[in-house]
View 1 (cartoon, rainbow, N blue to C red):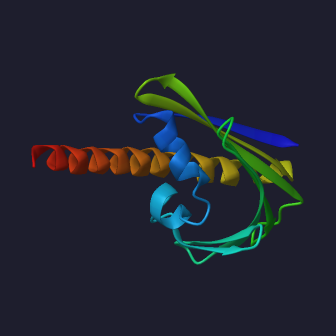
View 2 (view 1 turned 180 degrees about the horizontal axis):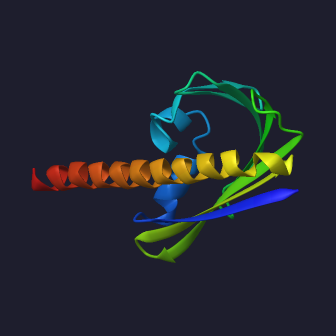
Length: 147
């Protein structure tokens, strides 16, 4: 089985990062906008529509608030996956910085280059999106403090 592990340093409090990660129905708004254009929930399943028109059905395996971990598995999509399981976990680096760890296990191995490319691009978008949301929230709070 192939494994890709990606660590993403994010300038945001762990609670802020976790809030975006655990919002499983808002992937297209709070996590990877532009990369995904729609998210629908169907029970324990999440259906993502990507900007290229691809649709993926994922099983949400676990959302663990105590350890800030989300686990999911792609169960249907265009890519010929035999197996897929992935997780995100948020760790505190300090009071205002977090480390988001994304681990993806999959078969067949031959898809590694394509999946790695998707992970790299997704990680960039996640970082930018969460940091922008935190900055926007901070500006709103400062304006509220001025009144």
